[in-house]
Image 1 (cartoon, one colour):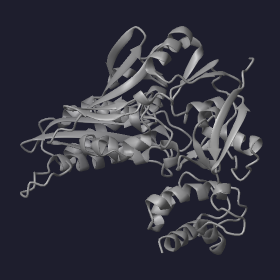
Image 2 (tube, rainbow over the protein chains, first blue to last red):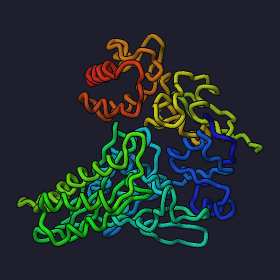
Image 3 (cartoon, rainbow over the protein chains, first blue to last red):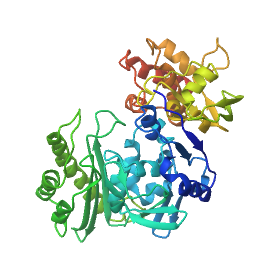
Image 4 (spheres, chains in turn orange, green):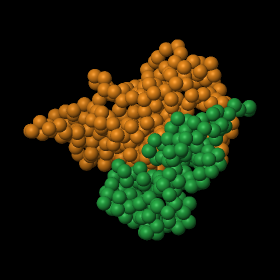
Length: 300
Length: 160
């Protein structure tokens, strides 16, 4: 189908975009990469009066390392994030998950900020950002505020952003040396929405788990943080029994998978158990890497 | 709602065009109906089938998930732009002909555009890599076997 008529503006600067949203935000929909919004408009599930196209605003597309944090502009294409050496080095969890996001044709247009604001609970980026303790910079004509990824996602396609506000920047703390990570998902076909997925981080000290994070996609109405499962791991040595117990806790008690055509909630819980054990093994082994004697730097 | 047409200028297959378009006109429909470049096919119109894949500044994108107004100032390549003349096909097109990489042909333009960009970055893909590269393009006839064969044949020929 084709979208119904709408007005269209393409501001070339951030102040100009914020001005437009302050006046017409309630009627408007912001167009980022369009890889979710245009299909929804083609289906006529959304019919905004005004589209505010951010694509000409080049100042919203960047990847920078600032001290101990990576700063990524909201309009940075997913493909650029996937190919960026700074992301690969300092946010390897994000780097590893990028190829699982839809297809190259989608990632060439899709933006990191667009996916986050769309907040599909089955999408990878929201779960990754919660796992990485990312902070989102949100701007309006009134000023700027910051919100943590875990507070930003409020429910199904619902986030902490007002009609006159824009997500402009994502701040990701760089990976610590003694922290391992893993991202695993299971989809029926590469690039499809996953039936279940998990982002894991695992911090080690003296052979014990210092902290861990397990965040699931497609396990509820927003990214699901399994804090009780993570708590089981802290202070313990990595054993198969421990990882199985954590997986059981997360899958049985800490998620509410909604089920769909291809996977019942029970099956999604089963996948969560299997993927959690695998992810913990990978993350723990990466955290445990000792610096090599030659001094060569290893990805941990 | 009354709509003001937008005037856009863009380059398609090396030729500059200036046209008035409605804001809601999809790039796929602009190519087919405004420019009569019907080689770009329209399947699902929600970004799943890949039939409408074109190159935007050399990178494959879904033309059904872009508005024509958004293509203003950009260079687009469609399947018509792969070869310079009708009797001299692109090596990738030749490989599809040789290996019988199509049946009904509906998905073929999108697959050719996807593979053109992919083979530039990955000149020696194995079978699994070709299948992953093609995961965003649906084919309902071939079972993909001969498409994968054609892609690898093209890769071998193009890299000499």
